[in-house]
Length: 174
Image (tube, rainbow, N blue to C red; front, top):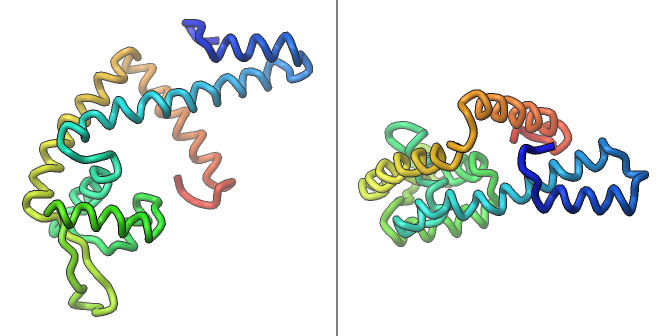
């Protein structure tokens, strides 16, 4: 039971009254998934506000950050980017079209494989992602400041364990 009662508790209490056969363990699971879902709904816009101030969305930042993290020459194939970001090829193409039009990435033929393209950060794209990532990390730290350092570490461990346990179920490393 969380320290503060919320709408999720109200929902669980209603199910507890109407369907006591669901059991406390089942209702606790329902409440946890309810909180995870609500957390995702609330966190997305709070995290995305940093990117919006710089004229981009979370997906744009994800592409620029993946290229920046790859190290010099900040170049990957569209396939590698799509795999890293867990996107379909069509979704990756749409993001790259937008970022290329904005001058943040460039696409060129791979000199080692003329059937393949390479995507690289432009100087403007690198400058942007380097500026935004610091703000992004500060924003995330502020959002998590309601938890102690020990709470954050424990939550990270538990969520990592949960994702690892599910990776076999969904057939991949998430």
